[in-house]
Image (cartoon, rainbow, N blue to C red; front, side):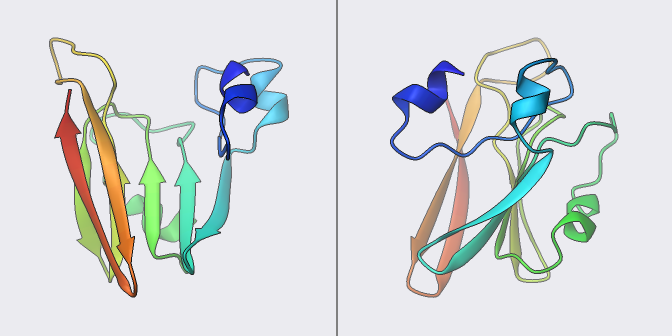
Length: 117
């Protein structure tokens, strides 16, 4: 949990490979708010490829942004006015490049992009 101590504002959820104490300390999913925008975060505990990003809409029906992981594959789409973002993985592999996601909130506008490392 070193990130929690180092971060000014920590937001975290448990992943499918997390065991004690992480899975006991972090929720499976959560919603928080920044600049008036609701953001849902989850690392689905089940579901491998193919993993349809649309599945995340049922997990978070009333948010502006959904951040999810699990698949390691970067996704940046808009579904029903909701930005759905999987930043990918922070390391290069034979399957996917290293990447991260960047979200911008400006007034009522929300945008997201995938950046490769």
